[in-house]
Amino acid sequence: MSENHAHCGVTKTLKVIGSKWTLHVLHLLFDGTKRFGELQRALKGISPKTLSVRLRELEHQGLLKKKVYPVVPLRVEYTLTSKGKSLKGMFKKMGEWGEKTN
Amino acid sequence: MSENHAHCGVTKTLKVIGSKWTLHVLHLLFDGTKRFGELQRALKGISPKTLSVRLRELEHQGLLKKKVYPVVPLRVEYTLTSKGKSLKGMFKKMGEWGEKTN
Image 1 (cartoon, each protein chain N blue to C red):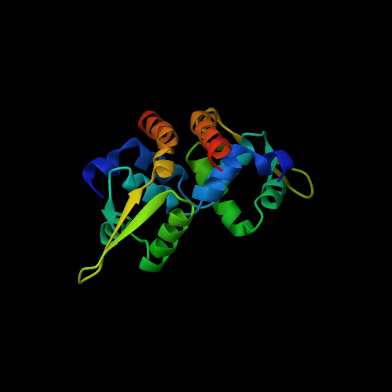
Image 2: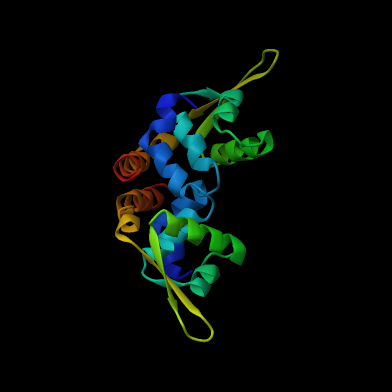
């Protein structure tokens, strides 16, 4: 990859959100706070392990926050942070393209 | 996934471009026509098999066209179609986010 390419904004964005499922997870969270089980059911085909890894990555990147409620069974909720919500413009473009093109 | 979610534009877009590597491949082709080997070198870590599958999917979706030159060794080039180029607005948003955020 050329130096220009490696340092451009798109490449930086893809480093953060370019993994499989990541965009799907973020898209679901734009609807509002979701529990782990809700995300898993919505993302048909994702393994609990992969979902955990993706959620942890997104939390480390500061795109979502996790809240654990000390109840039995444990209740864990995920919500977009303001950094996560700042991807709204990109998702808007994705939505427009999907409506127009497919 | 709710009915609304399944039919919204973002979901449609993610069905077309949501696989691992797909956005990276498209991003490289926005720079101009690329040979198979150039893409493989730029996408460190991708296997030739996966790259072939992704390119075939993108060709079937009408986002790129493939041109084969009957020389030895075979030369194969990939170029964005106008449908592929219509993703420019989304990539622009990705670039802006990457520059601003990371």
